[in-house]
Figure (cartoon, rainbow, N blue to C red):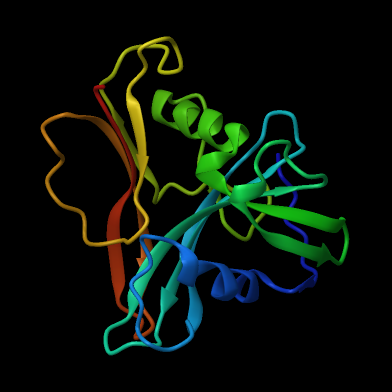
Length: 197
């Protein structure tokens, strides 16, 4: 199980993301620098215990209407070979030292564990507590077993979050989770989905 350390990160996650988000093709510019607040998320455990896996929600309040972004992140103790374009940044962790932070959908450890979540082989964990399942994260999956085989379903990660809608007819499954708006309002939406290729 992943151990959540109560410590400092410099720069912190919101600072890393505020510098990284504006260059993403799915970012909705407001004409101002992002003003981010943490809004929710969950974690998955790496079976090898080497890579931190977090499905983080941040809300940008710099515009007229707040926009919630789902930003899956991985945290590594060394660079991931061939993933330079997916690097969000580096940070100094108060306990673990230098960490390389990656855009999670480009990290094979995150994608493998997300597929395991769809199959019921991984359990969502609370974002800020060690060894604590998060039952608010729900999974529906009606695809083939195993999902990682040749011809596997196509995995899509939602970047700009909205309220949960009726599943697409081609969807084999969805991961749905919640987040909290800056005004304290609660929301749920699809964080990731699988569809037939």
